[in-house]
Image (cartoon, rainbow, N blue to C red; front, side):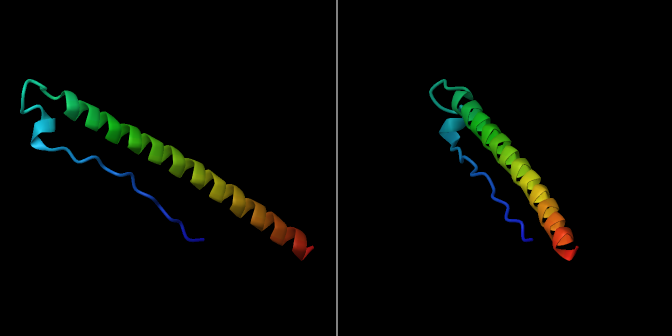
Length: 70
């Protein structure tokens, strides 16, 4: 079975978002980092769930093959 893996969209940040302008000192940068972390956590959760479903499906298919062979 072919496994398709999706990748999370990374958030690009510019110089102004790195806290280098008007006293924002990292506020937006930290939010962007939080978004990337949250995206990665969501991605990993989905990937884990799909991996579990794949294992369950393989077991079910194997079980059906054994039952048919009887």
